[in-house]
Length: 124
Image 1 (cartoon, rainbow, N blue to C red):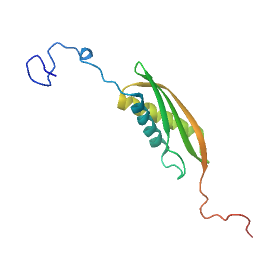
Image 2 (image 1 turned 90 degrees about the vertical axis):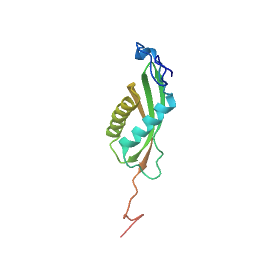
Image 3 (image 1 turned 180 degrees about the vertical axis):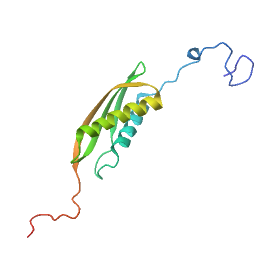
Image 4 (image 1 turned 60 degrees about the vertical axis):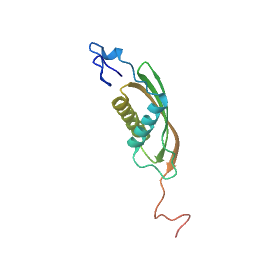
């Protein structure tokens, strides 16, 4: 941008920040951030679990997020979903600067933990 003093990259004097332009972040970018935040909140997943998937709708700097995920079984499903909600709200707000008043978490599958060292079938 050529500013008022002729130097490239300078902003003309008196131009308010709101008048300089706007940055638009695509919904799919916010969805990738939300999915990554959900993954961070969950920690280690079972080997056969799908990574969290997010869909996002952004309107007027407010995002509605839907996360689909797999969880290990047994686990505290409510606590896991709460941790995902908190992490998504925090990370999307910090990285993108938009509000996230609604995070819907859908648990699609529960994956049983592998039974290491246990016998299969009947034993005597």
